[in-house]
Amino acid sequence: MKIVIVDTSALIRLYVPDGPIPDGLEECLAAAWRGEMILMIPELALAECVQVLWKKEQAGYLKSSEVDEIVAALLEVPIEVVGHHGILIDALSLARRYGLTVYDSLFLSLAIKRKAQLITADQRLKNAFEHSQGTAPL
Image (cartoon, rainbow, N blue to C red):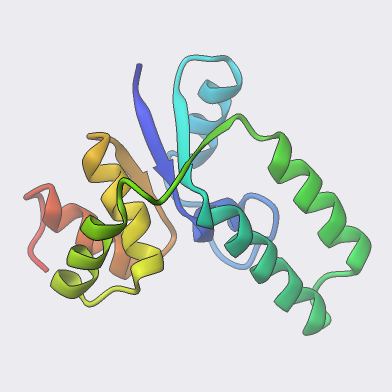
């Protein structure tokens, strides 16, 4: 079954329209709901999503009730959560190679390890993923 890694920036865009939804995300989500695809995230993603939403609440862009609803909705999405233990060393290496944060490199490491597609709204992370696949220069 096809595996797709979804990063925090993409997940947030499903609920907060602060930019375009990354290509293919809505289709992948629909396929995951039908059980035709596996969506996967490193465990950090859930905490990152809640942190982003909390910051948007603090800035006055979202009400606390909206944040609560979005967090509840995120927890219902059919996503497999993967621990960091098996990908942390690779993530550090990828962070060094591509000049990314270790946080972003966890998504990249998971995508590489699982031979999966990566969906992100972060152009630097997307470029690193494409480069790691040999499809684009960095």
